[in-house]
Length: 303
Image (cartoon, rainbow, N blue to C red):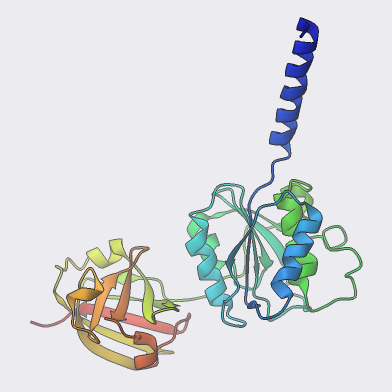
């Protein structure tokens, strides 16, 4: 091979590599309350593939309980920390579809993007990762062609389409639409507090497979009680201020430390206080659900 042609090959290879890097797509992660019994999720993915066949598309979950904005917010926050900077999340739990609620893209200070209706679904990621900027989706530009007369499937027509264009690098964040103030709609709830004797917090979510109760009381707050493994804990759970469960149970690190069917308090896989029945379903046994109106109070039991 002549030296000149060798140099040409190197130049072409470098240009190809630069182009590949420049147009590399970011992961696109989808969440919804659609389930997988019909074509809703497949339609969203089809729109995304139509935008770019180079996209890597993943499912966070499509089993959010219907209309449960609160759980959508928490699942986004729980998953996001394990995804790299630049990841684009599309979350569609949208009971107000077709109304005046805004469609936005939130960029967090961690460098991730969240495409969602601004209905409270972004509460947890905004608090956990911080808001770098918010833009309103310009549907005159960022909407699936010929979908203007469709009013009930913005997950397909607006959110999946915009998210795919952003993840594929077809549009920049600035091209999503006009910049908004650095705020989003937030859901009010009880944050963990320790008053020297007891901790109050929120029953934020259930472990759906096993019925364990997950709270927002983090390890640091819990450790302020200076408890030892095996200590007895008084637990009270309330819904809208009304007590629905009150019992004493031990604090252990794992389920098998108590008898089958017995309750325990433990720290779950994300280092928050949780309640369980060993090989049982705490939620169904005691009719406990989760959400911003469910509270929990824990204190050391009297010896």
